Image (cartoon, rainbow, N blue to C red; front, top):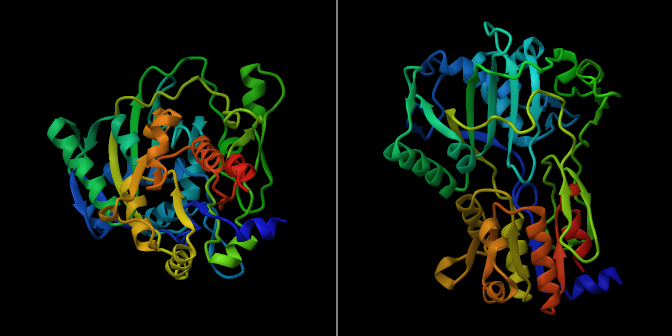
Length: 413
């Protein structure tokens, strides 16, 4: 029955990373100190404290380890691997990130989520007294830039971001994204009034998981904060290839190995995505306002070789291919055009998740025949798109992995 249904598919709603692209990421461009580098600057071009803050932020505010599998490929979140390799290149030591993490005094970590589209880590940095802390944030470029009031100049001194400079930084994002690069902002702020109830954890209890770890126990956090039993955080699943019949039939298989929170679904409503429990710490919400921008990075993730031909076969068969991604809209449009299913000159439409969510059914329906890219989207957006297409009589196939894709996958034909 599944094969028969698949043979009648009229729409494919696809992820981008690892499905349409190779999920092999490399940092190739940089916005640093107010200047856009189309090639990475050398380590000698990075001045301290900018270089030190940048490397500290990457090491502390990531969870992936540089571990290779039997094929000599790095295993883990490919975006974080790209950042770590760049950082270690600047420090000349592939294990430098381990030393930075080991010596860090973590206070609280806010993991990446599909809703927030960023991750933040609060530590007590060297030289800081009790009640002081340093927050590092990385995430969606336009979102993190919106949290910044300063950027770190080339001299290593923070410069206030006025309207002209904000427009310049936004232009850097648009230029990199327009070339199909995934853009991320890296930022930080020092805090002088961390609540005294803060419970600093040992590096062992908060360190990112290693290749042999299965879970992280944070018993020290729970016991010291008086919150009862220890919380345990399961390790992320190792990357796997998508071997679904859809992947074999169209060449659109693959995997997007971003971290995925758990899902609660109901039959009548768009499912809510429940975030994983946060590590215990002094803040209910991360103090992310008023940060200083360290860098905007542009990460290349090439289109899979077989995808343009597979899309052409789908187009010839009358199957509409759509991309649903959490990435920047300019990045998504460029990749969709390279794959062969987006052409603004022909009336194809790209839309962002917040706009998509704001539309009622009567407002949304006129867009659907032309909608090819849904960017900065949430799992609920993908679910809503799939459900509406089915209600309009389409037979919908969905590609994706991770539990945050489950609502749309369950809803698909």
